[in-house]
Image (cartoon, rainbow, N blue to C red):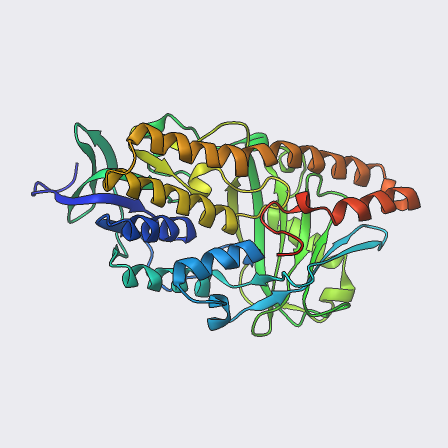
Length: 388
């Protein structure tokens, strides 16, 4: 298992340099830990994602980067309103007022966070594939093609199929605990409303899912389709077909549009009732912790939030301020409070929206009034307060 060499010694090893891994590493380093981050990618690199960052997500980026309005440094679009569209053309609008969100391509977002790591003294190794991880008496050992790495604590922030899952007895998501999505960058989208509108379309054939059109960045709009895996598997169309059908159903947006490059698909381990925060020196964050919102498919705020928690508590263990058991309990409590409990309610909302669409209840004025009221409530996006 790996080369026979003297293991490198680190306080914290972070697997993955996406938003969760960067947040964890920065916070652990600020607590005085010696931190190594490994990622098999080379940065900057594109990442399949919807690119949406909530206002609270933007605030977390500011804190990690150490600058106000850090997302203004990179190509971006501000999201002033969220628009829910229904098959009969009815739309419900939610205005974010003085708390706009962001659309930031992951090529730029991840590079921004990656650069912030080095400012905190974190060592980052790109193009490094970890072949295996195991626990030992005084920590963990990870093997790459050219090194053996030993650390006291381990943070798994390496997304779906995380290498730390076998250590925790976690299996791959499926059914109600998995979402599937396809996204493409599209040029020439026609905007019927404001350029700052983030549009979600609840369509027939997309039960427990939606199609989206996000404000364009540098001339290209992020367009895609998301659906819960159990409902997707009941259908007879592949994701590329669902995207094609969605775009064809909205010629007012896509009649002159051109997909810039081949659409890409990905899986989203969405939150369920199982707490996958970690144990025994392993902390888990982001997609690896199944922290994706089941209703909206949002994951960047969740990654930053859970990553910060993992890094802060790991750092507190390293500097002796907190016992390992206490650190795990606090990290698990945060996931329970901020991720898991809201997900229970939001799964119910998702089911209710699907029921309304299947039965065309959105055609009734009273139902639209109810939907309009619900769409402006804070629980629609747990990561985005209406007024700051």
